[in-house]
Image (tube, rainbow, N blue to C red; front, side, top):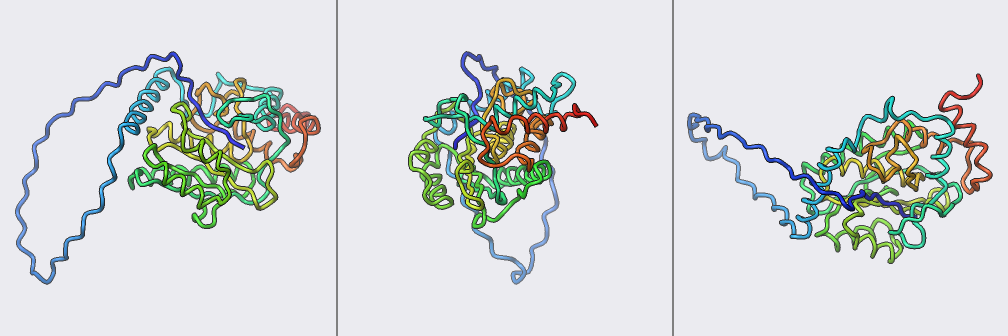
Length: 323
């Protein structure tokens, strides 16, 4: 199963970014310290290797995504407020959105061509979800720390909401791998995927290493067919993204890898909607996760079998059920 995040950019006129002019500040002078005894002087350590300069392709992607993020923010998109009075929904809306997102595949025969009409059976992780982050050489230590912190904050929230075992793990013990790689690291990405998921389909690997510009992040998983304890997922997030788009990819792809595998234009407030109104998981999306891991729904259920249960759960979660 594949799901990916795309931002709608066709026909958009990007707004140029204004640069702030900085003021020149005088350097502060300090007294020269006395020479230290020779036996106390520590040998100088070799400077760490500098990251390899970005290629023209990677630089162009970075510039494009910075402009895109600025354009979306200027329109009031990429919200992080979780929804509000302007985004109300009822039980019927929640049930409809859950059916569209959990029982349909975002991509059909070709993993990069949307085909939301493909109906699937109900699926979610039955074994624990153990998440590890992997970084290409282009990720500097400061950015790695930010990405690790974002995952560390997000995973407990997913576990709490779903009441399922979801947490961080060392690379060797993980079954959900979040890969942060850039356009200059195709071969490194290929080797990492083959290492963490032996037998990963070659056709999917070729697609992952040849993404078009408007596919910014994606996730593959075998949850719809794997036996309990054999579930696996791989999410890819481009390192050329600015911070908010990168965070948005983390939120959507990890959640989609848990079983919410589709997007719907009717889901609001939601990150499972290609209009990019929301950048991070919303209150509506938390309810979708509660529904996804409700024990009344069973792996392998058809939509027809699950629909009455979905309606009941949605009514309970929204308070529209008789006490």
